[in-house]
Length: 172
Ligand code: NI
Image (cartoon, rainbow, N blue to C red; front, top):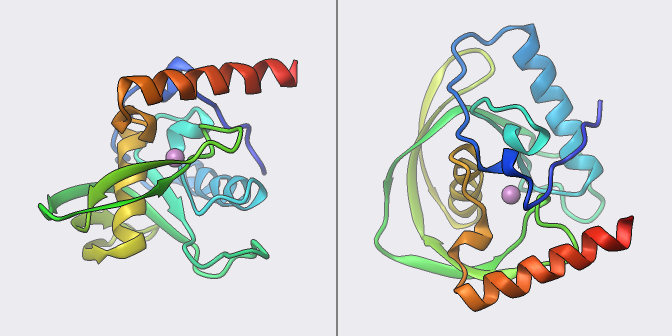
């Protein structure tokens, strides 16, 4: 089931999400719905607070590409960043919660060590670089109430918030 995606400046995007304690039917449904929603809106990652659920769950598919079909769907429960490299990469970031064709350059660590639990409750440690490192960093930020626009200069942030206002009023 596709769930509505919250968009900035919705204050619910700023709340900190709580860890998942049991992987029950509710969490499994949430994960399935998050995949449906991510593919429907052509994203490559989605965090539970973006659909208004404040639990530490992230879904991702870095291979879905232009046709937007499921290729490498991955769910990360309680993802936790253990270590980041001092080297950063600058790239154009975007977010389903920052709609209206808004993409801006941000810096994120080039390498990220993180731990997560899969849908079977098994814990994994991952050394990520490239796209995975950027995405897990972006999605884990969501679980802490952080959006990519927070990394921009004040002037850029103001521009983005004006564009968001325009975008939202164009929908009314
Ligand atoms: Ni996002």
